[in-house]
Every structure is written in C-alpha cells, then in structure tokens.
Length: 316
Image 1: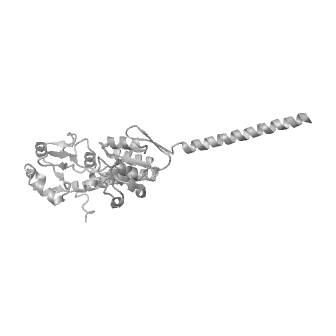
Image 2: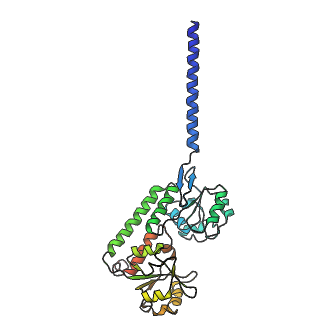
Image 3: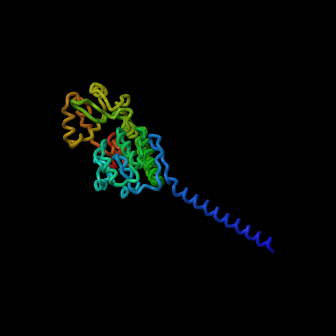
C-alpha cells in the first residue's frame, strides 16, 4: 500500500508540472501575440514601420496623403496636417502643424499621434526629428505615374488597415480612366503645354519625368515637353512647338483671369496660336498636381479640354 501511495504522489506531482508548463506556454504565447506588431509596413526608404494596432491618431504632412486618408474614411483619425492640406474642406478643421517643408515637431508631438505620414521630398530633417522621439513615421513616395499613385493609395491602405477600401478606390479610378480612354480611342492627339511657371523668372512646365505628363498622355494629349526634365523649359522651344492647347493653372494668389492676362500679354507667349485662338484653359491645381484620389478626375478634366467634341453632350 505504501508503494501505491508513493506512486500516486509522484503521478500527481507530474500532472501538476504539466499543468504549470502548459499555463506558462500559454501565457508566453499570449504575451508574444500582444507584443508583436499588428502592422509591419516597409516604406519608400526601405524602413520597416511597426504599429501595435491600426493608427487612431494620424498626422499627415503632405496634401495628397491627407486627401487619401479622408477618401479612405479616416478623416476622424487625422489630428494634424500642413497649411497646404486644403482638400477636402473638412481638412480645414484639423490643426495645422505648419508649412510643408518645416512643420513644427513640437506641434506634431502635442497631437500625441501614433503615426506620422510624409509623402513630400525635402523633409529629411522632419523625419529624423520625429523618429528621434519614438513616434512611428512613414515616408511614402510613389513614382511619377498613375501606377505610382495607385501604389501610394494601396500603401496607405496597408499602413492604416484599410486595405480593402484602398483597393476598391484604385479599382474605381482604373475603371474611370479606362472609360475615358475608350471614348477618345482613335481620336487625333493634340499637342499640349502645361504652364507651371512663366515670365521673368523663367519657364517651367510638366516635363516628361513628372506625374502631370502621365495625366496628359492618359487624357489623349501629346506633351510638347516630354523630352525635357526637372520642370525646366525654354520659351524658344515653346514658340517652336506652338502647341494646340495651353493648360494654365491660376498663379499662386491670383485668379485664372489675372494669370491669363499676364500670360497672353507676355513677350513670346502672345504669338502662340493657342493664345491667338483662345485655346487656354484653367485647371484645379490641387486636383492635377497631387497624386491621390482625384487623379482620375484630373484625367477626365484634361480629356474634356483636349477632346471637346467627344464630351460635348456631357457638358450640356
């Protein structure tokens, strides 16, 4: 009987050890699950941005990022923006962190963000300063094409756990542009010049290495500055090409009427056929120049300018 009592004691001790080990393993697994980041995203720098959960307080330091966040239904999560983040109109209610290239790091931290997103070149100092505080910051910079725009939207979707919404948005944009391309297929391709700057400080346009060049092409136009780079162009080349259409966004702080008056009376510009025949058209700067949710609308706006006969019934 004494042997059986000892055996029973040993078996009970072994059973307790198994239960304790199982509990410790379960606890360790749970702790590992809690400590492991829910989101790991590699940004355009090749840096892994790790988040414990979907961000609930986001500071956006680029206008196109702000537009994308609102388009993905994350407007309530945006707690900081730049002075230039002016779309949608609801963004105006969000606290500004300052200008585009030197936002206040102190203001950013005061918003207690769990994520900061930047998509503008030239903000290295801001990235370094924010990273030093331990706040996660992601730099997303898509290529200067519509595909780059789609990648940017999908990237923000992954980073904010709104991947399905991002994919749906991209799909709609692709469909919209495909519909436009179907309407203008086989039509003559007019030459186009996009005015990014003019006058005494020089001539600047959407050269072949810019996102706007891709928009013009998708809209059924031929960019006369396709072989130029870095936004720079020469008046002599503009006069020589004599484009069919001139796209003229309003200058900063001016109306289209004021900008048009300055352009059309300038030396060299007044001799252009498009000026003489009044084929100068305005566009929404933000819609055309920002890679984001409105980029498909920008293609549509340009296509309607370049192919008025195709879209005549829609404009009535």
